[in-house]
Length: 369
Ligand SMILES: [Zn+2]
Ligand SMILES: [Zn+2]
Image 1 (cartoon, rainbow, N blue to C red):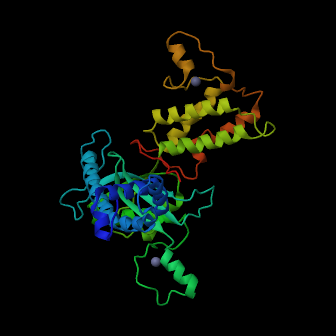
Image 2 (image 1 turned 60 degrees about the vertical axis):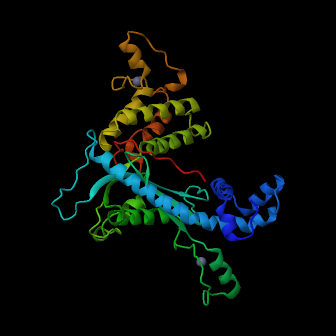
Image 3 (image 1 turned 60 degrees about the horizontal axis):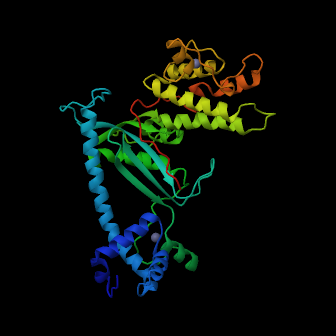
């Protein structure tokens, strides 16, 4: 790893691999110095500087690979969409003015600093557009509200005047939360030009701000008229999480407030997930009715239950009797409080908007900080 000049440093495969590994672990030059000194390698202190040189060098290559990989993913997504006979996506005709391929994708944003409830303070965030069928990244955006060079200059001189020319990392002004809608609008707007596709469906969490902005300017949004307004679908795993959070909040509340137990909460979460999975082709309203059947199920009314998730029905079909664990059932008459509390969440309509659940299973995963 010993090197005298920049080109020396970058021509050795081992140096590049070392630098990439550090980047993937989310650490930098300081850690490289510790690691190399511990391994008794020479000139370990120099790794502080060497890491920066290598990082800048690999950045260009990583960017190139990213672009190629995303282009290949878009091609794959287009092919899979055209050839999907189960869920047809209407395509433009060749004689149309705008024969872009229409594709469906899921969208989410992650921040480097964990947000708590409605507080978003992260200076950086990354957004991904993921193909609904290929499950591969089609487009990505990184937003950054800070730049060390700019910040230092501002702190020293009190203005941005006579700021030295530098590779500025700052590309976003505004709140961290607003990055999400901005990234979505940018990706939808550049998809036709960048990848010759039009994103007709977005599978996402219930971010109403993104939905409001991803409309034409005439409808109060930020999309230019030539960009298709996407239809929004909710990711099923997100819906399950919203429901489970509400029920588990009841379960961890004091007994005076709620008698919902952890066991009941866990059973409800299982039923909800299985029900959504089973009925994902239904409209939002139809699904609400189906989810309501879970409430009947825990009061021991199984007429509307489904053998896919209800053991009572399954046992009945096999002429057996199923004895459910006591905490999986509630008494509707004696325990009105618990019944009403769960009823509140036992429709799909308590979420802020009533999007249908995505029919194509999305790859929706929240990015951990
Ligand atoms: Zn800067
Ligand atoms: Zn049942």
